[in-house]
Image (cartoon, rainbow, N blue to C red):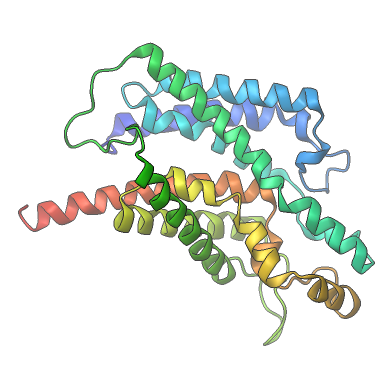
Length: 299
């Protein structure tokens, strides 16, 4: 898929669809009672969750036709762009840690956050399902020979390679988040503190873009696997940097705005929404890079 002017307009239209429908119109479904508090999956009612799934599915479905004939490649962007608005409007993670004065409260908070990315990944998956249904109903012609076959049926070996890609993406993105998601340090050897939201946006998109680029280069798999890894990065960081002993030490000796690792400053909705966009960006950068290498070498 060439990034022509028309395709840029398609991307902008799909992004606008997700931003308007999910980012603004659906915001009351997830808006916390305290505007300074973070967006949490557990504060959304069962009705709100069902409404979000339906809206995400509908946005993906409509996005496919808006972006046709590249609906499969562009339509999936609608839901992550919509959730990115929530990621920006949300209060920071430090609001949650400041409310937890005791070590036991910090442990309970960590447990409640561990599986929350799966919730947001399901919302993204609902949008992807809408794109797939639209593609099935549209029954498009076969892809050109030079177009990446992102919709081909995976083989059993693909799942093994995919599991390796997910694990690698978790490791790569976690490392890069520790590098990129930094607040301004007041002194050397200080624990990470809450970065501003703009820094989080850059850090998550860049980290997952690098992971997806490497996954495409070395395994020839699509953006699906790095995006899936966004559900496991927080749990991985908690397992390695946020154990019970560390939580107790931080609760007793550090300010509530300090964290053992920068990944722990990022909300689940931010990891999944921005991680999905970064994964798609990194995949297409790798595709364009391969195209450039072939043409530069005369292949």
